[in-house]
Length: 94
Image (cartoon, rainbow, N blue to C red):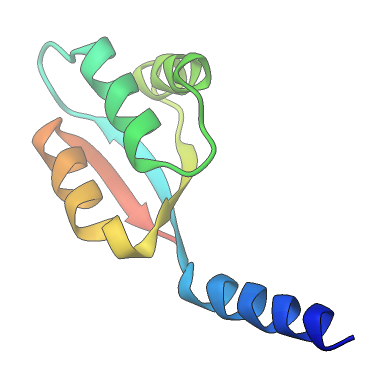
């Protein structure tokens, strides 16, 4: 019983350390957007998004529709910087 309690408490403390920030990617204002760079950026900064899904989300974004992604809050500064570098407008949801 003590082992189960210990595992539960350590898992709970790990979950408290993971804070997720939700972003709404609104548009890309680049004259000639680099689809591959945008897809790679989305795949790298987001939580649980594969490269193939990132490619689909990039197509949706470049067609003019907004896209929602989740980013680990610990890496949010560099994620937001990478999006700005690619001329992607975003809105922080949470």
